[in-house]
Image 1: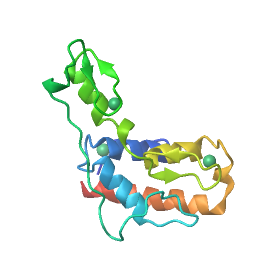
Image 2: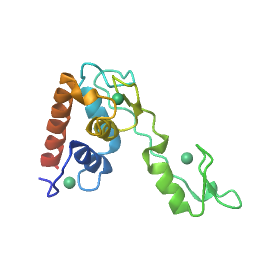
Image 3: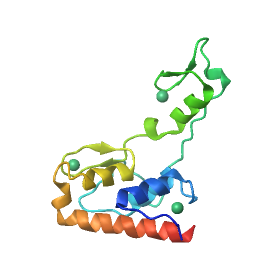
Image 4: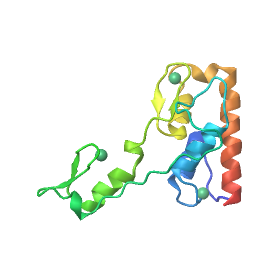
Length: 149
Ligand SMILES: [Zn+2]
Ligand SMILES: [Zn+2]
Ligand SMILES: [Zn+2]
C-alpha cells in the first residue's frame, strides 16, 4: 500500500500518473480511465475496445542542438540544455487531449486535470449526480493501483 496520504482525488491521480512509486505510466492511467466508460462520456478518442493506446515516448538527443540551443522538434521551443529539453518532451505537453468536460467542453490531457476541474467547481459539473459516480469509479481504480504495486 502506498504510504502517501492524499487530500483530494486529483492528487491521487497525479501521484499515480507520475509513475514515481507505482509502475503505472500516464498512458496506462489514461487507458484505465477511458475503460471505465462513464455516462455522459468524458473520453475524446475513439479507441478500439480493450486495446491499450500506443505509448509514445519522445526522447531528444544531441542532434536536437540547432547551433545555439536545443530545439523541440514538435513545437520548436528552445532550451539551454538537453536535459531541459528532455524534461519538456517527456511532460504531457505534446500529448493529445484525452478527456472532455461534458458540461463546459473544456479538454484535458490527463484524467487528473479533469478531476482538478471537478474539484475547482469551475463550471458546475460537480453538481451533477453522474459526477459523483465518476469520482467514485476513479478513486476505486486508483486505490486498486495503489494496493497492487
Ligand atoms: Zn505511491
Ligand atoms: Zn515541444
Ligand atoms: Zn467543465
